[in-house]
Length: 500
Ligand code: ADQ
Image (cartoon, rainbow, N blue to C red):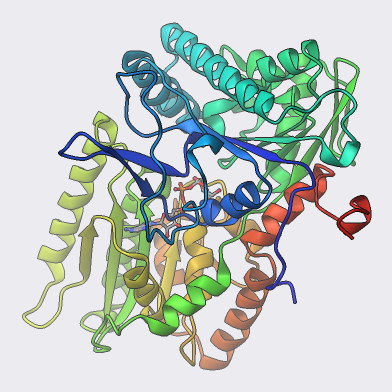
């Protein structure tokens, strides 16, 4: 019955994220139009906002010269989850393009992204970029206050109608500072929740951040801070104690700050499981079936361990030549942060490596690696997931990793294939029946792939059944519901006698 529920927020929900759930595109005739984002997060959260008369605060994906240019409504016939999000429920944050670039490409993706993924050598620390990060967070906070004002809730608002502000991710770790301050000054009650989609690093890494105390204080201005797994929660609690000297309760995951007790919670994100099953049921056959496919699907990012993965596959072919001509690796890489030099270099390295490995092993009838650089449609992706024999999810570090979950949802063939995950992804912590593979140990990783390719049918069935069952129950709706519940904002009929 968990598949049928509609998650509802007891008050209105204001979602604050770097991006709106759609991006704006300028048509040739000068008109603005919306292009929906397809991710599971948007699919799960948009209905809660729309049904609860809530709002969404975010950057619209392009810079608008005219500050008064209105946000367009959705096009007629739009069936995406955000179609019902009216333009007066959207607050588009407009930021000066130079400041935005320094905030986003500089501080967010040049400092926080590598550091929080425990790759400090890749992180740069520039005070001008940090200044712009502060400025943009303040701007997001101002827009959130503007959104809160439209809800017109005074200090006598009943507890269950208090609006919930849900701030997302590492781009907005400071926004709660100004939201809390203004809401208190102007007596606008609200609850503040934060969710971090990437890992939270251990103290020894976090302490490298020159502005760590401000970041922690920003997050602690929320009532609840959510992470994917308990390890990240404990890292955060530890940093609060050691950096700020806060009193903490590790067992109950509480941090005391400014006379308040901030709750810290592991809330592992899920996927729209049934939607992926349906896509897999309807996707046309993509592979000929001649070769077993080992599949990798990732944003082209250095955290995803693509180079290590290819080297492991090469080692497999070296050490177990019986797989030559029988197994192909298929790597789908989505372009990401393409204007950043580091990402351009990674793409070049990867393509050289693929060329080298293919050059070494290809025969007239078989080549070891197939590589797609680009976005593929969800239907096509579901076909890949369904028809692959091994799902190879081996990031060097990853908050959760949704690909691992989408792969098991789509494994509807009987008998199913095998999932391999890295222990350094949140998914590796929670998907216990997957084969675990340390991507840094190339020879070991090659052996794990060999084990997956030769695993008996019974074992594959058993493992995949458990994996699928867990993801079906803990889907993305369950995640949203857990967040609302942790915030005390999950709609229950008893709170609303008038609704019954
Ligand atoms: P990401 O780093 O983007 O997310 P991930 O969780 O793997 O990583 O999600 C990627 C998404 O992109 C998946 O839904 C996948 O289907 C899609 N995708 C990948 N390649 C694609 C392609 N070629 N074409 C089309 N779609 C493609 C961040 C964190 C993660 C965390 C999520 C959610 O870094 O650790 O799991 O947020 O919290």
